[in-house]
Amino acid sequence: MDLNSLHRKELVEKLQSAGIKDKEVLKAIGRVKRELFVKDEFKKYSYDNIALPLNSNQTISQPFTVAFMTELLEIKPDDKVLEVGTGSGYQSAILKELGAKVYSIERIKELYNSSKEKLFKLGYNVNLKNDDGTKGWIENAPFDKIIVTAGSPRIPKQLLDQLSIGGRMVIPVGDEVTQKLLLVKKIQSEDEKDKEPKYKFKTYEDFKFVPLIGEEGWTISN
Ligand code: SAH
Image (tube, rainbow, N blue to C red; front, side):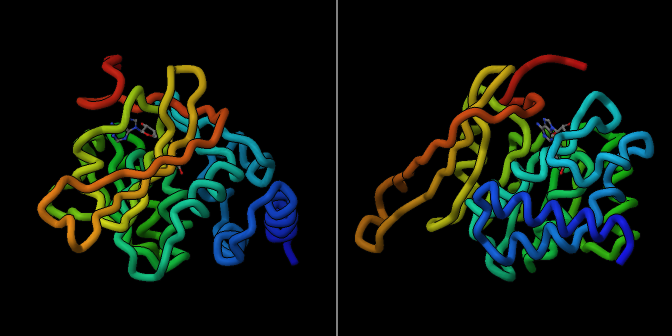
């Protein structure tokens, strides 16, 4: 066994003792080579449970956060999943390992280009778009699951609209420093088809993401 696969195995054990239970999620983390999504100078930290810098001042999320969000989504094979914030492409690869159809949007051209090349090279067939993901991806909506991997001041209305009935969304909401992770479930019973759908929320404290910048996110320009 090479050193990276040994470290990957140790990371999976760490995530398991940190409370991740979903066996399929753990298996996916155990299969994806995180070192391929990390910049050369940080490769030695690939299997530490920490976020790491990407280009353009962005970060690849902490493995625990990736595992936790993915577990909350309850991905089933063939689920149609929208990711907002492709970043390195690592989260997309995890979703592909779980058998999902993945649509991922990244607003920074440089990151869009590099994740596109990487995911293609690794054989992950992900639909990518260089745009503001707070608007969703209307041509491919509705989505069974939506994962937002950047921190937002609110839940973008267009993302709620593009979530399927019975669908789940995870999104960090808060200020620019810390956020709560929200799990949103969209509900509409058969006899209420003519009414607006309902939403159920669960919150998980204390996460830290880079800002979601766009029409329905923060308005910082860079
Ligand atoms: N899921 C990524 C995490 C990347 S960090 C991974 O696995 O590596 C979050 C990313 O969201 C950054 O790359 C940032 O540029 C991007 N982002 C921020 N606002 C966005 C928006 N409105 N639309 C799309 N991407 C956005």
